[in-house]
Amino acid sequence: MDHPTPKELDTLRDQISELADGPIVVLGVGNELRGDDALGVVLAERMEGRVGATVIITHDVPENHAVRVAEMKPGLVLLLDAADMGAPPGAVRLIPAEQVPAVPGGSHRPSLEMFAAFVRLECGAPSYILGVQPNLEHVGMGDAMSAEVAQALDRLEPLLVAVLARSRQG
Image 1 (cartoon, rainbow, N blue to C red):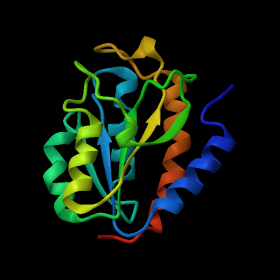
Image 2 (image 1 turned 90 degrees about the horizontal axis):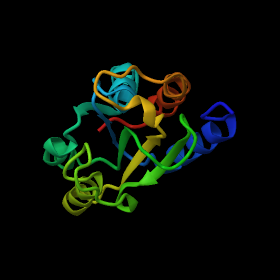
Image 3 (image 1 turned 30 degrees about the horizontal axis):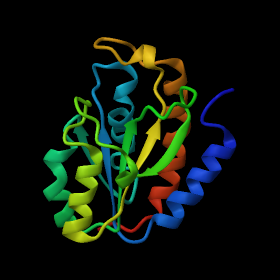
């Protein structure tokens, strides 16, 4: 089955629309040299200048942007990232960042959960990870993006542009 499915996209559209209260900051997280892990960075780059949200490309160091994000006082922080959820490659989930366990040795240190906790403490903004399940055979150094994740990227881009074009700029 292709992912994200139309039902997954409808659910995602509804979830983000419901959460979009006030200024939104979108962070593109990932490593462009590691195949499917590039998802967040590539998607954020495609969205830049096309949405009513602040878009920041963080690569694999979102923590370096935590203070800047908190100072913006957003109503929502949306982190775009490849996330191993045990789902089929290309599947999409919107996950509260506080529910992501700290992963020692993970590619994003400190964990996204710690980033989200800092931002919530500093400005009260909730953080969500828009996670796309990578094909785990396509996350090594020098790997190409898998067809499943490339398809998810192509399906998510117009949805996010449409939903976030209506969001209020901070």
